[in-house]
Length: 108
Image 1: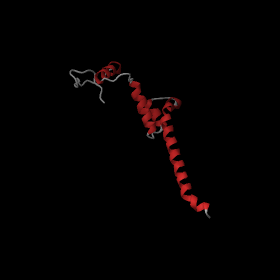
Image 2: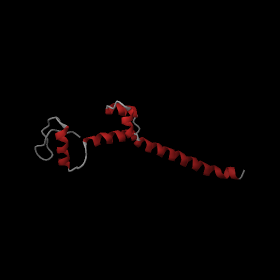
Image 3: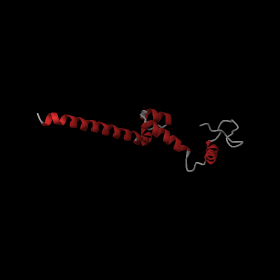
Image 4: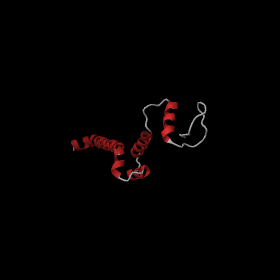
């Protein structure tokens, strides 16, 4: 997405670079019909998706410009969901193996 400073006609822009997010963001929301979305929401979504997809939390911290890891760890809940899924997969595999091995151990 490229944010430009203003529009001439619907779908056109003057090609000048964004000067202020404070004026361009509301204009973008109005043109797109989106409501209730803060610019910070994009940042939060990016960080959450990055962590969820395996990005190193320290790298995300540096990219976001956080000085304290605790600030970045609020996005770690996404990684926790991935860990829960991994544990569930491991538990299912273990149960499947017990079912496969059951006849061998039961009747020996």
